[in-house]
Every structure is written in C-alpha cells, then in structure tokens.
Length: 90
Image 1 (cartoon, rainbow, N blue to C red):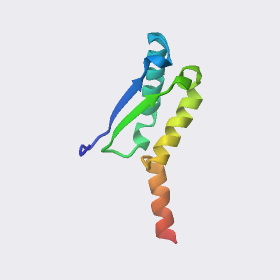
Image 2: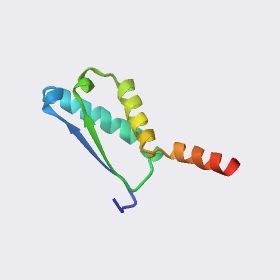
Image 3: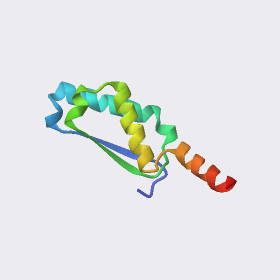
Image 4: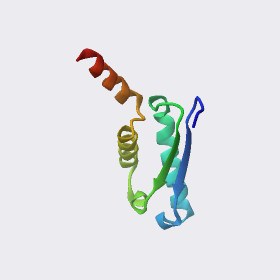
C-alpha cells in the first residue's frame, strides 16, 4: 500500500449468518489481528473474507487459520527473521 502501516478489511457475507453472528465473527477476527499486530510486516493492505464455516468455529480455530494465512503469504515477522537467520548461517 506504500504506507508505513497496514490496513485491514474484514468481509463477512450474509451467507455466514444473521447480523449477530456476522458481527461476532468480525469482532473475533479484529481482536486476533490486534493481538498479533506487532508480528505482521508493515505496509500491506490485508483483506480477510470469512466463509460459511466461520459461523461454527471457535476462537482458537480462527487464530490458527489467520496465522496460517499470514505465514503462507510471508507477512509474519517471525517467519522472515527465521529465513534471514537460516540464510546467514548456511
């Protein structure tokens, strides 16, 4: 995004459930991102789209999925520091 900070968008379709469920999913995702904000590389626009299965999931499953996606897209600082350490050592 060319900025020194991240922007996060959260999309929860009506297919996930009624407004109470959609807002709960949004709040949980926002809280997970808040708690892991320092671990995420800066300067990106991140869009999280919740699917139907999100309505029945628990906090730990949300957290695991978000961390997995951040790692998959090389957006976690801990992953980058491990890669740099590996490159420097060998």
